[in-house]
Length: 83
Image 1 (cartoon, rainbow, N blue to C red):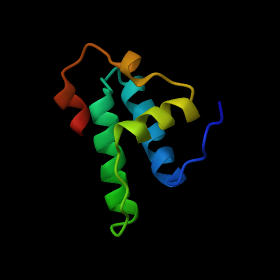
Image 2: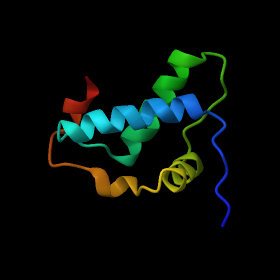
Image 3: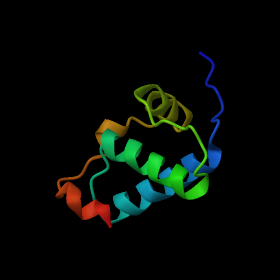
């Protein structure tokens, strides 16, 4: 199985960094939160982008980073990670 390179490597770099910060603080990081953060970063980095953090993007992200996101949640209120 071939893993495609990301079309938006800078976005994925930001999402990974955000995840590490959440994990280090024992904050949750659900699939929906990953997708929302990716779209937030795209808006910050390239407001003209047509990027969509779809389920397909999420699956490919998981493959590229050898990570299953749904296993990464902590038992903390999700609103805590909004900051």
